[in-house]
Image (tube, rainbow, N blue to C red; front, side):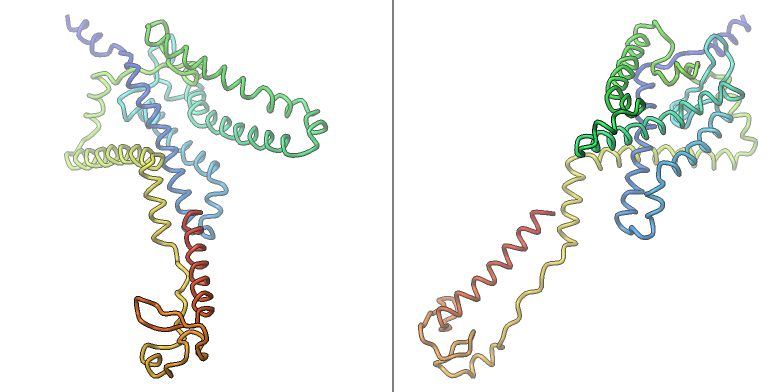
Amino acid sequence: MIEAEKSEIGANVLPSIFELIAQDSLSVSIQQAVRHIVKYLYERNPSRYRLLWKWYDEIYLTADLILQTFYLKKYGGSLAENFYGMKRIINGTCKSASTGFPKLRSLFMLVGWPYIMKKLEKIHLLLSTYTTTTNSRVNFMQLPLIHILVNYYPWIKILFSTFAFLLKIAYILSLCNVHSPELKFANVHLVKFTQIDIGEENKKRSWRVLAILASILTRCITFGLYFIQFLDFYYNSDTGENFRMEQRTRNWKFPPAPHKKLRESSVLLLETNKCPLCLRQRTNDTVLAVSGYVFVMVAYIRMWSKRRNVQLRVCQQMWMI
């Protein structure tokens, strides 16, 4: 009876497809949120954060490698997987993929594979733009690797996405224990934390003070991750775009208003037969009904045309923003 209970407690339970999709979206949201933050810093101060933005992919790769190595070694899963209470198990065994060659394979699929795919995407976009906008397409496309990358890379992406979709369908139908090609190539599958895992984690907290600090830190990380997901959603939504548009409008510096040639008191001291604009004797009188001043028609038309052009330029610049 006791052995049956132990086997039931230690049994590996596969997570649901919704939990797997949630942890996948969390890892993607973290990457996008960090990229948005770095991009915002670069736009605010390009001189200071130029190198950070230039080498962002490599810096993020290094930081992600250190973080995922720590989580794989200590918890047997990535940051997002540990956040949703999952760990990696080698296919065909009950061993954790936290050491040795399985750990290296998991690290490559977690960190190296997304980096390679991102670089291939950029290179493909650059080569496609270059070959369509230059006249050296024939000579440039004679290289086999470039020819394959430009012409067949989109089909490779479609095949990879189709394979990922079929794996998810097979996982839903309980025909497969993995839901993504990355796990398939790493030769691991995800299982939920067992009661033994949770008990071991609780035993490691020797002092109550450390347990409280760990609990507070865990909650802060939890809220931080949810905030990152919200930040990514808000940044890509129409509301975020409207907010950035409003901020640009507020920070826009309008051109200075034209200075008056004469003050109100000086205008009152003028001779009655002179125009307040051109300061010459009036020849073709034009009365402004609002103020009662009398101007020369030509001077008034010129002044009105200048102000109208300034307003048109301001409106055009605001529209460009």
